[in-house]
Amino acid sequence: TQLLEQSPQFLSIQEGENLTVYCNSSSVFSSLQWYRQEPGEGPVLLVTVVTGGEVKKLKRLTFQFGDARKDSSLHITAAQPGDTGLYLCAGRLSSGGTSYGKLTFGQGTILTVHP
Amino acid sequence: EAQVTQNPRYLITVTGKKLTVTCSQNMNHEYMSWYRQDPGLGLRQIYYSMNVEATDKGDVPEGYKVSRKEKRNFPLILESPSPNQTSLYFCASSLFVNTEAFFGQGTRLTVV
Image (cartoon, rainbow over all chains, first blue to last red; front, side, top):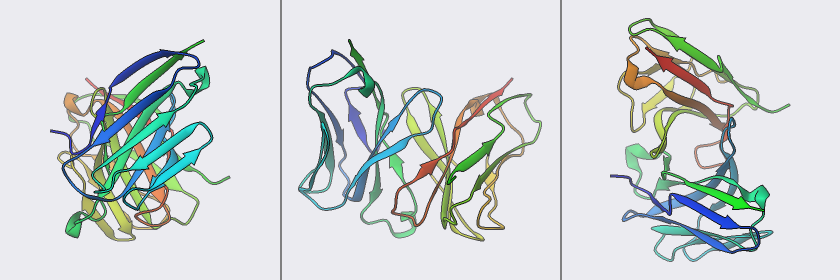
């Protein structure tokens, strides 16, 4: 079982629509990151959230960290074809201990925005 | 230019033939790590290193070895590759363990 469950795994929408991607866990994370990956490239960081309830905006992208720091969401307003890609959430466990250095990724959401 | 460089980008090898994938960063980052990416599973961490001579297992370390003799390099070693290690591998580095990770461009490995 995945420590971080992302949903949906696939999303195909028309330009101009809004969408939300979810990242859920039963564990508490000290921080959570969202990455975007394009074919043939490595992931690129979009945002890091560290405080429960935190909301960060990056142009048309809004990221939220759950109050209990167990979940996060990525909302895109008025999606554009340039938003197409693989979106990944990644987190570090709060009670890391010997696992402090580990970074756990969700399975990813493949987003396709049609013109 | 600040970057993480992996080599080779593509590799086809046979079962049991030892191989090394190199990773180098020029940003003086302390933290480096290796991941494999498989369809439907996202990225899974293989090994990570908090600093020179400090390495630790990630979630899927079996069949892999790493070393961190100097800050800039973090090679991934497959002593006896098997077909289930066919995957896309990424190296990443960050200034510290909880800061932004910069990824290399990936190494696509096929073991036949």
